[in-house]
Length: 135
Image (cartoon, rainbow, N blue to C red; front, side, top):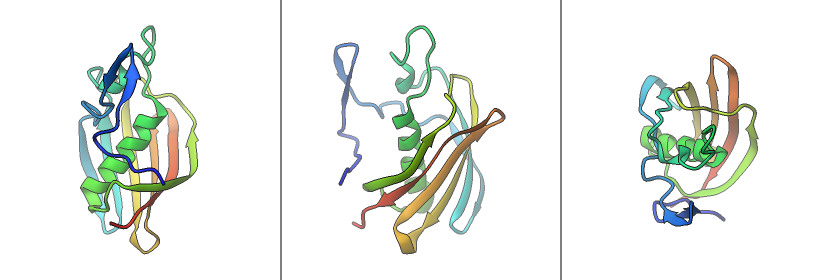
């Protein structure tokens, strides 16, 4: 079982860094109807996850996309951030700085999971099902 929390760190450029220090891009909730939400995200160049990944041509790491889905699902639905597993995780297209994304969330509390899709005008970038751990 993996639990994502704000104390997790990773090494980048030889120093320890919290990957969520500036992790969430600016966003707004476009629609929220029951267990369904659509959020609009703007990938600003200042995001910590873009630093060092890759210096010549930065992209958003896949783990950051997954983390955004988990964090924003918790903020929108209050479902928690403890992850028990991830199913059907797919990364189809890279996400570059200045991208405008649409994050679609479907909270399935009876199954303790959240389905997500991250897309833009260029198509689907990532999708998956996050299995949550009950607190």
